[in-house]
Image 1: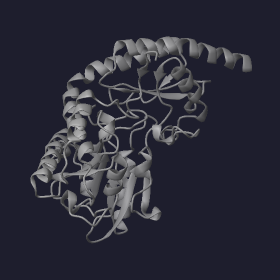
Image 2 (image 1 turned 30 degrees about the horizontal axis):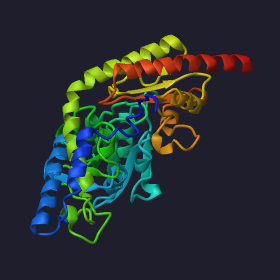
Image 3 (image 1 turned 90 degrees about the vertical axis):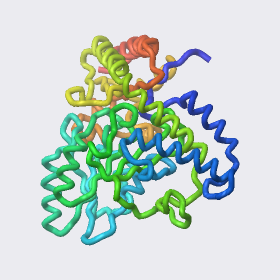
Image 4 (image 1 turned 60 degrees about the vertical axis):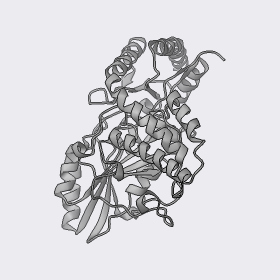
Length: 383
């Protein structure tokens, strides 16, 4: 098989070798972690060791980590109206992941989308006004704002939003699935009450994630029937996946020291693409972004054509969110930013990670240059 360059880390990261080894070793753990015998205690010890590592990645306490089947379940668990006095209203930014936009257990009539700026940053003034309006009507706010966007890499002002939410007497959840390992996470500094993570975005196994709580915060279980996860998520734990998650979390924490190197590679890609296609647009370039993410739109091109052409040349990238990659439709993120449809249709996402090398950048450029020239020539002929 010819050599390939994988530049789609925001969809999923390659499984780290240390994680693979740890998962294989964990397959020998025979016991049910709820059992009290030696085999059960060994499985439990492996889970708790992983819980400590995941908690460290989020800047939280181990006992506040709830393991789930992934980021989507973690988001669904977070989006349940809190118990207590008053009626709850959910506020989400217009660029959230589809699993958040779905609203969890909130009724559609009690969900409000908050707009974003043309750069893709939540409009905090609009959020404050919306909370004030609903507060006068007797509603309590439950806000969900992602730490960083999966398509553009835009880092959202979660800490600033948390202050607004706290003053309104509400709760704040942040989907940090894309942010983990790419920016420092700290529950206290963010001011978040709940935070979602996913193992496969940081080089861990697919099918395991976590919802991390601020100390003292409780959640209503989605899955009931057993006492697992301190009665917050019933069902025998995915021991092997959790062990792999723990190793990936430990390595992702160490990766934070290398974000400057990744950002330099990302910047080089953007600069060289602009030199080859001067009319291309690097979306959200004027605001803080994750160091690994570039969302580039090429006027006159179609994203699916670019993705297929690059794939045939040995380079993997995405067009929009991978969760919707089987559908040819406009990105809701770019639409919320007000990006014109004719530009949005030519947007591709390039996302780097721990195994990305300069050779991958060169392979991308070597594939992109003839591809974009053909597309431009075809566009001129069609005109």
